[in-house]
Every structure is written in C-alpha cells, then in structure tokens.
Image (cartoon, rainbow, N blue to C red; front, top):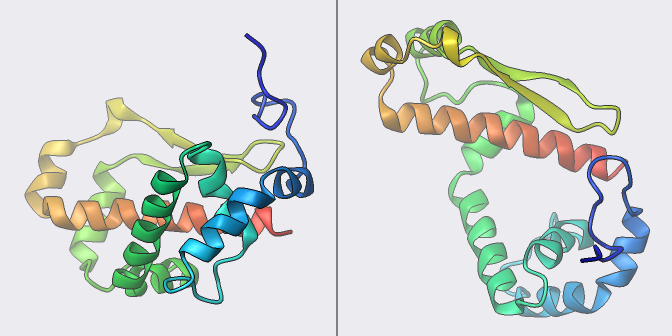
Length: 161
C-alpha cells in the first residue's frame, strides 16, 4: 500500500506546515465553523490542523475531540498556566514533588534533530511502592497531565516558529 503524501514518513520526511494547511484547508474551515462558540483567540489553524490530521474523513469525531480539548484546557487553566511558567502545580506539596523526583525516574531528556522531545523512562529504577505511599493516584495523574502539558506547549511553540 502506498502512503498518502500528507502522512508523515517517520522520521525522515515531513511535509511542510504550509503544505498541510493548504491540503486540509477545507476541514480546517469546517472545524472553525463548527467550533465557533467554543473557539477562543488562541485556537489557530495549526491547532485545528491537528484534529484534521488525527480524524481524517471523520469531521464529527474531530469536532468532538476538539471540543473536549477546549473544555479540558478551560477546566484545567491553573495547570495550563503552571506549565507555561514551568512551575509545578500548586496542588502538589514539596514532599510529593520530592517523592516523584526520587521514585519516578523518567523525564524529557533531549530532542531529536527534528525538535521532537525524547522521553526517557528508566523502569528498573522506579520505586512505585514508595511513590504510591506518598503521592495519591489523583496527584500522580495531575503530575502526568502537567508534564504532558509542558511537552505540548513546547511542541506548539516549535511548530509556530
């Protein structure tokens, strides 16, 4: 089977952002019209392109996912702001942050030559039992969401350069 030109031939060949925006302008416009009530100033064509690419040929699913993302970002605005400032969420105590740092041996380490963040996880060094004694599941989920948001913001900034 042949791979459509708009699909990334990982990792060596990537279509330009301008080409992707041009190729998917129809679904981007449809998304913008469908999200008119929810869309705020920070939602641009590049943001909408992600949903066009992720839900190719399924506009209703793309709209649903985009609405869910907008809702999540609104409901978690404190976490989004903390990630923008690269400051841990205020809900995490110093003891919990220390336990995460000590017991969860994983982090974004570097970037590929394309600027993609590389996440290194040393599973053999995890101390999950101690971590879960100190940090609740809900707080660990908050930490993961924070780290993911930091990575998303980094990728967003790189995409727009």
